[in-house]
Length: 638
Ligand SMILES: Cc1cc2nc3c(=O)[nH]c(=O)nc-3n(C[C@H](O)[C@H](O)[C@H](O)COP(=O)(O)OP(=O)(O)OC[C@H]3O[C@@H](n4cnc5c(N)ncnc54)[C@H](O)[C@@H]3O)c2cc1C
Ligand SMILES: *[C@@H]1O[C@H](CO)[C@@H](O)[C@H](O)[C@H]1NC(C)=O
Ligand SMILES: *[C@@H]1O[C@H](CO)[C@@H](O)[C@H](O)[C@H]1NC(C)=O
Ligand SMILES: *[C@@H]1O[C@H](CO)[C@@H](O)[C@H](O)[C@H]1NC(C)=O
Ligand SMILES: *[C@@H]1O[C@H](CO)[C@@H](O)[C@H](O)[C@H]1NC(C)=O
Ligand SMILES: *[C@@H]1O[C@H](CO)[C@@H](O)[C@H](O)[C@H]1NC(C)=O
Image (cartoon, rainbow, N blue to C red; front, side, top):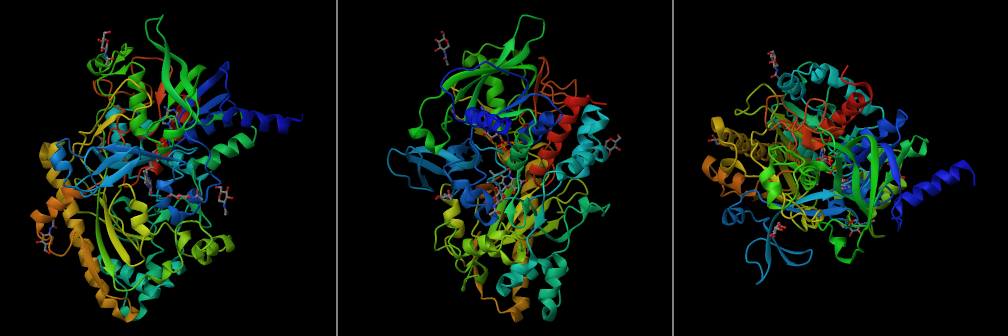
């Protein structure tokens, strides 16, 4: 057997759930291969460190659902990788049920959405899509690539006194991410093939004060779409308002994510073992010394072991196994699973652990607190006529899917790949609201030919069921609510934790925080409606008329709109549950070098680490901190 086949066999062996316990020992073990764990594990191995990357899910890189940007909604419902996590926006269930997305389980993994559930249905709350896969949520997210604001980093530098978090230094790590991550915006020629769609976008540009002359609307739009919201040369980028293209994690119309970087690291012969279909149940500590020391993990080999997976229903039980880390263990299981795993292993609030008879390794009150997210809301309209760009798109990867054929037949010319070479949200208004706390942009208002109202079982089918909807949907950045929690529901590692976001007035209210957030979103709805009214000033493009469906024309005035916002808002950037903070902050779980306080050889590197939710989108900041963590682990803080 030559070396190549030996390596290939080793990879196959590692990913095919061996039936007997093995004696695994590595310098570093990373748990979770998502935005936080993937870049880090790759860098450690590329520096010659023997590294094990353990991932609950499987490699989905060949799956069309994870490749085609236009399938970004559909992929979140693919059973091969989806986790149905349910959360509470409000603990008061009566209030929570004012959200039409509130969901009941009628049989295992079968759901009823909205009021009047059938008798005996179990209330579950609001669906929060997550993925188990090589690459974590990055093969199933919406591909939007927005880099963080300078103050996101400077705040951490100020909070901890660790100057290496200064935005200038952090920019080095962004450049490291670009070594392996290609990004590109939607090709404008795809959009201008559909004049009705172009008409909606120029309406948006007009609402941001830079609408082109109607006679020249199409050329004007193409020019505006050259505006890059991640500009590295505009010194005032963080506060620049306007109308922008949306950069995507894609290359020639094919999704890019960290999964391919991990695979390239293995293929290039670096000492990285990737163990997919393996679920970590516990961190092992050596407690013989003064300070508990993380020495490895207990895990189970097996597919779909977490009960949030709809395929758990028919899955075989896992095979218990363990692995030792001679240097360090890094947990990157995401904002829900990292605090859950820490707590199950004895790291967390003592009272909560004792309730579940978990022996306390280190009482850390901050684990599973400080959960943050954006608030998002839609304004949806339905047109009289379909958008031509979606002609022939069935979004189901079946032979009749003409848009799939177009995408497959034109692999090299982005502009010819059609509707599937975009995530559907090609342009955004960037706004500094009247309610912002500093000079940073705090609203992104995205437009696209999609019926998007947030996440609920079946959301993707509804989103693309017809081709006549358009949404301006708002994402509120720099939200102020720190009051969310991730708590154990049981001591069983395969149960999802209890997740309470405590939205708006049930969360952080200091300084009117809840009203300021709600006010900004109401302003965003006003702006969205303004954009929709500007559409009619460009009738020359020939788009059909439309009717507003959500919130609906009769929901008007600040009070009513605020109620709408509080009822229906959602998020999808859960973060901050294992925060970095100052040495004298009792709730700071991590120091500025990602180390879990009070124990040795244990770090956390994923969406959980931020003290404050960063920027507008979260994948970019997570990739950046992952690169930073690799540098800190390999070279110290410098
Ligand atoms: C529908 C949707 C759309 C999104 N769109 C965007 C977007 O357009 N732009 C953007 O910037 N962000 C987007 N996001 C958010 C972003 O993708 C995630 O926040 C990000 O991937 C989180 O990174 P992470 O490393 O913290 O966790 P994840 O990427 O979730 O990775 C965690 C990994 O750990 C694994 N794991 C968990 N527990 C265990 C265990 N016990 N043992 C072994 N493995 C385990 C999981 O299987 C998973 O692979 C979106 C999210 C969703 C849900
Ligand atoms: C993609 O996901 C959908 C569920 O949304 C599923 O029906 C379909 O079979 C998946 N396609 C592929 C190619 O696996
Ligand atoms: C960080 O602290 C410096 C000095 O105190 C201050 O000038 C700056 O505004 C702070 N930055 C942030 C983002 O808080
Ligand atoms: C898309 O990219 C992935 C790797 O990221 C690759 O495996 C796949 O072959 C590409 N698909 C197409 C159709 O180009
Ligand atoms: C904890 O242990 C006690 C005593 O053994 C037992 O009575 C109790 O049911 C246990 N609680 C849980 C949540 O397992
Ligand atoms: C929304 O617009 C209405 C009038 O169009 C105005 O009265 C109201 O103050 C605006 N609300 C916000 C929060 O900007």
